[in-house]
Length: 375
Image (tube, rainbow, N blue to C red; front, side, top):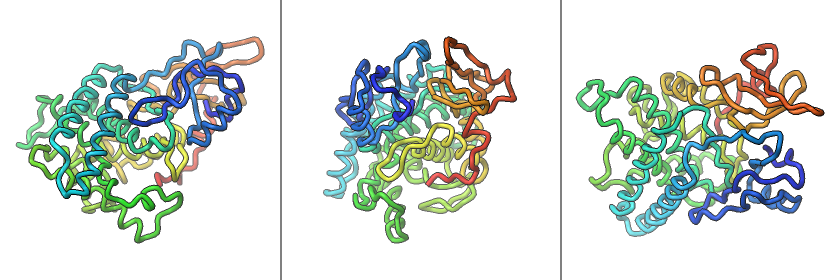
């Protein structure tokens, strides 16, 4: 729930992650939320937490990655980015050891994600803003792999011979995952005063920012890195109807793996806490992706995303248009927009399936301002 709605003395239901490579949380599960802790979390850029109380007991948001895999991925990305900083100084590509370690992590993530029920998972890590760089890489990889698994298991992919195939999907997912883990590695070449500027970039600064995909590809110029990995790094900011960078490609000129990356990257950026922008709720990220269907993003990939990512996942606190409020208990697989809401009131606790009550809406969803942009 949002911190400003969490009562003093609430019991933390899950660790509050720092998002850093060492995995040390800001606060442990079981800690009582005092006003001092809440103020400290806000200063760290954390604005929502999981709580454990009687009203929500049994609602257990399922993360897209296990804690162990997330921790291993974060540490590996941290080591790779440290190595990339050294590479920028020496003019050498990222080391084979770093690439090999991340490839192993990408394969582990793909295998784990392939074993999930793969819909309405908890995608938000709720970590601090200063952990954004590492957690964004991991979260984008997780979501991109989730989309890729569903897409390719459903209809295969077109191979280099131009034929549709279902063979070696696991190898393709590993390459997609590696590209996603490294998609922003080129930002290490962007001056920190631009990268972490708290306001809007001026035109000159924006031109510098737009160099990061090519800088990333330069760091991966080794022949040991698959072209499929490099195309994700190079083209994740291309847009379906044009206007993206660095090459201004359109539609199928953009490699499909990069089109998957574009959706995953924008959704996670919008819903993550950044130094220069507050995290927005999952439903805002979902609406932005859906509104970009066929314009910014490949329509087929948006459709797959919409089958997997619920605007209001289990554990979300929501308000209904009839004045009631509650917590999302679960989400029907065939109707992600109409969750089952656990409602609490004086002396009562019950669940309301919104699919059975079309007259009841969700505040901030049906009436959302469609002019929202993924800045």
